[in-house]
Length: 531
Image 1 (cartoon, rainbow, N blue to C red):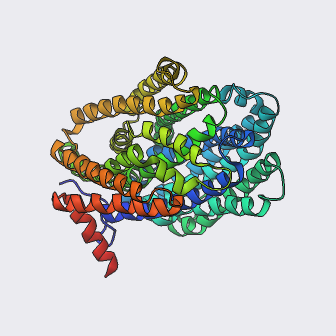
Image 2 (cartoon, rainbow, N blue to C red; image 1 turned 120 degrees about the vertical axis):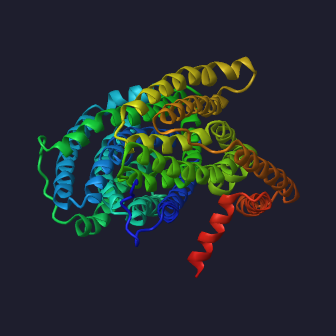
Image 3 (cartoon, rainbow, N blue to C red; image 1 turned 180 degrees about the vertical axis):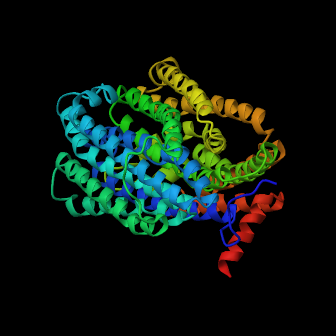
C-alpha cells in the first residue's frame, strides 16, 4: 500500500495548502502595498519607473532560476524522501552540499551579472536609450547582489517545506517588501525620480538580507548542524545536481517567456513595460495563492510516497485530482474577475498619486489578456510537480521549451502587428502579449496532462464541475457589473470594496446553490479554524 510520509500530527493536504496560501497571501498583500506606494511616487509612464522595472527583472531572473522553483523541484524530492526514510544524517549532508554548491554558483553569477549589466539591458530592453538606459544599467548593478541573497533564502524554503513548516517560508518575503515600502516612504519626497529609483534598489538589497536572516534560526533548528561542503560523489547529491539541470532549463524557459514579453514591451510606447509589470504582479497573485500553495504543499507529500508502482500511481492520482479541484475553484473566478472587472481591481489597488484612471483602464486591458491562460498555467504547475515527484525533470522541460517558442512567435504578432491591423493604438499590444502567453500556456498544459496520464492514469477536473464554476463566476460578474454602474463615480477603493465584495459573495452563494464540493470543504476548514 502506498504510504505518505506524513505523521498523524502532520497537517493534512488541505491544511498544508492553507498554510502555504496564508504565507503567500501575507507576502502578496505586502507586495501589493509596495506596488501601490511605488505607483504613487513613480506613476505608470515615467522613464524612471520603466528603468526600475526593467532592471528589476534581470537579477530577478537569477532568483527565479536558482531560487524557489528550481530548488523545490530538484532538492525537495530528494531531501523529503530521505526524511521519510528517517535517514536524517544523509539528509543533513545533502542539505549542506546543496548549500555549498548553490553559494559558489550564485556568487559567480552575481559577479558576472554586475560586470555584464550594460549588455543585459541591451538584451532585455532594446528600446531604452540615453539616460533611461544608463539608469537601468546602474540599477541592475545594485540589485544583483540582493537577488543572490534571495536565492540563498530559497534554500531555506526547501528545508522548511520538507519539514512541513510552510508559513514562515512563504511569509518571509513580507520583510523584503516592508524594507522597500519603508525606503519609498522615507525617500519619496526628498529626491527626483531617478535618485529615488537608486535609493529603492539599495532598500531592496537590505530587505533581501533581512528576509534570509529571518529564516536561518528555524532552518538550523529543524535541519540540525548543516556543514557546507562540496560533495559531488554522494549519490543523493548527484541526483539533486542531475535533476537541477533539466529543471533549471525548464524554469528558465518559463522565465524567458516573461522576458520575451518584456523585450517586446520595451519596443512599444512609453508605459508599456511598467503596465505589463503591474499587470503581471496582479495576475500572478491568484497563481501564487491557489496554484503555488497547492503545488508547494503537495510536492513533499508526493515525493515521499512509498509502495509499488501501481500504489504510488494511485496515490498521485488522488492527490492530483484533489489539488486540481481546489485550484479550479479559485482560479476560475479570478480569470472571470480579470476579464470583467479588471479596471476596478487595478483602480482599487493602484490608482493614487501619479497613477490615473486611464492607467487603471490600460492595466485592465493587460489583465483581460491574462485571463486567457490563467487556469491552464496554474493547473500546469501541479502537473509539473507530479513529474518532479516521480524524479522526471525532462518531460516538463520539453513542454516548457515548446511554450517558449509559441510565446515568442505569437507575442511578436500580437504585440507589434495586431494593433495596427485592427486599428488600435500601438500601446495596446501589451494586452496581446498576455493573451498570446495564455494560448501557449494551454498548449503546455495539454501536453503535460497527456504525458502524465500515460504514466499514472488519467487525472483531472470533471467538465461538470468546471461548467458549474464558470456559470457561478459569470452570474457573479454580471451582478458585480450592475453594482459598479450603481456606484459610478465613487472613490476607487470604495468601488473596489463594494464591487468585488458583491462579486465574491455571489460566486460563493452560487457555488453553494450548485452544491460544489470545494465550497463545502472551504466552509469546514473555516469552521475548524474558528473553533
